[in-house]
Image (cartoon, rainbow, N blue to C red; front, side, top):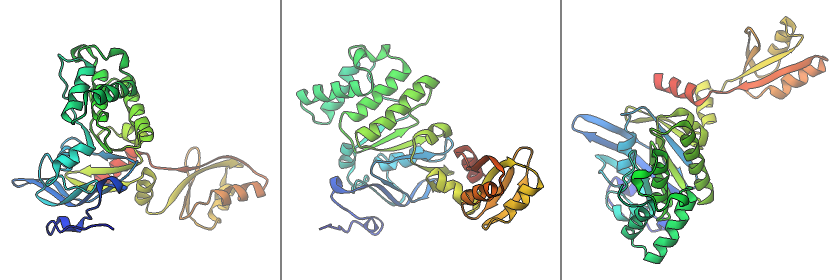
Length: 329
């Protein structure tokens, strides 16, 4: 039986459930943070479910880090409510921190300690025994590919290695949610690829849920299952990239078609297909706008005429186009 506890008028709207059994990892309701007259986060509503990588995408100063601080219980909301694994970060910050791993924009490590010793220290802070610290430390270092430099002082590690050690530091307490704030900042392209591959792999293999805050569109598109576009403190759109593209297009699909013959006859044929609402010609393709997926009908119509179909592709928005269009609205 699910127990619902009356907390206050705001937080009572969010269900309070046994934290270890729920698949809803993050839930916010009209979350607001103000600093004087400035609103950093403006009525934020979103949910994060178990096993997904959610990309919080927006420019610097959009309110992403402030949101993370509220999720972690490091700053209190001005209004609204938030639950992390069923816990209220403002009232139960220790319970949240036990279950959430947080990698800030600038990784806090002790330069004079070795990579291994840094992990032991974190394990000790989380109440792990020395034997368990050794076991988990060795596992985490191997998991991020740093077992060969485990004895080196952190001061001798490259920036990319420090970021990976930060991931190991997050993993050592076996969190259910990992929050990463601009984890690839300052990394070279090869190190970025390695870190993104690591994030995706650990999500799948360790059954983690990841909230990734970034302003790097290509990186978010590469690994995130859902994206939230954050502008001036507001989450103006969220969903999968295909869902966001579909909303932008207003339910209209755009296709590119090329066949032989590729002249006016083809244009007339395309206009007669049910569901097609517009046909235009550019330098290379016929562009077909339709309310439904007409690709099978186009292929059938062309081949029934005995013509050769060279190109048939639905043109989808990329994340950069989606972001710019939402940002401009």
